[in-house]
Length: 498
Image 1 (cartoon, rainbow, N blue to C red):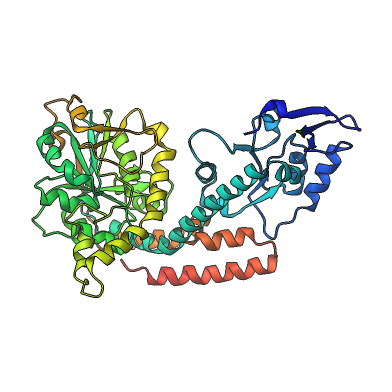
Image 2 (image 1 turned 135 degrees about the vertical axis):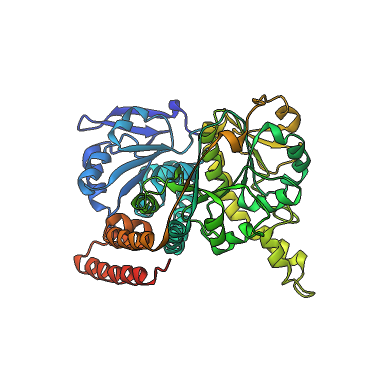
């Protein structure tokens, strides 16, 4: 990292400040403003950017010219050094390459989100690129990571968005018994299905009366197999495979289910079990449920079901939250504590030439990228979580830490005090019955037609189309894209059966 003694501020020929680093100039020695104006005017973009980034804009002369060049865009800078900190006010947003434990790529993604990142454009301030070559290369590497992550998230949304909408319609039309929870003061343990869950099962059983047990859907089967009934099972996965984790005999379990309204759920659960509908603030699901006056609890959209469960748990209790089975790392054997619903299905397809070991090895390598994304989410938010959230295990040797979330043992947990008279079932639930039927379906159909005409619907259900239309500079091409989008919306509405 550059140090202040290597920089020099002096007057240019026209009286403006200029700057050099180890004798190499970052701005013109004659007219820095004119240099910045020419630089800004020479920049080209084949789309309409929402954000324009300059990599180390030094004394920030180009900031005001960029605002004229791209009047509808947010003008941002990525700093390689703190030396120019007093000039940061010239920019709409400043990012530092080196800023704590969180990588630049994560900070870019967390601030901008996938849609704005995909619609951002990045430029080098040429002297900075030549002088700070190592920092420049690292910045571009981080930008690439952020953009690729945005592309992947947007791809997932584009692929699943229509499925999520259909899931919400099925959910709203089928649900019968709604339950809401009041806040508790008991510690909450969130059980995930990582390999470290297995060694903790005896401790969960031994201490069962001292905590509220929230299981993500993939941990439901191993907990039940060990004789543990969760107080709550949470699922937020919209993929069809997610149903497998919740597919159990009708009389097998009387637990409560917290289900994202966009998630894939067996219809029999919606019709027979006590359900907490979870909706995202500002989502289309919220509008659908409001139209039928179905009660729900607010949830937060995360990249992983464990993240959604964690935020839900923090809002549910005033006490601490403990993560069990939250490895977020590939395992040499089974990737999940057994039994696992998906493993049971996959095992049936094993044979001599494509055996279990081969499949598990492939699964291990295929899961690395997604597990890193989930792990990065926890790490980037770990400072916020660290005072109340802990990862709990029987002294498990984790491959990765979760940032500032502390790892503790069951011995330390045993010193956590909880009220002895707590009863989750008796004290913590509010119930209501939903009539449903043809009237509900008619109301949903009417609401669907209404919201399908809004920009919000386009952005949530057809995110890629929305971005392409906003980015397009040609009015003629934009009109063609809008016409195709209308046809897609009409087709979707026709095919929505619930």
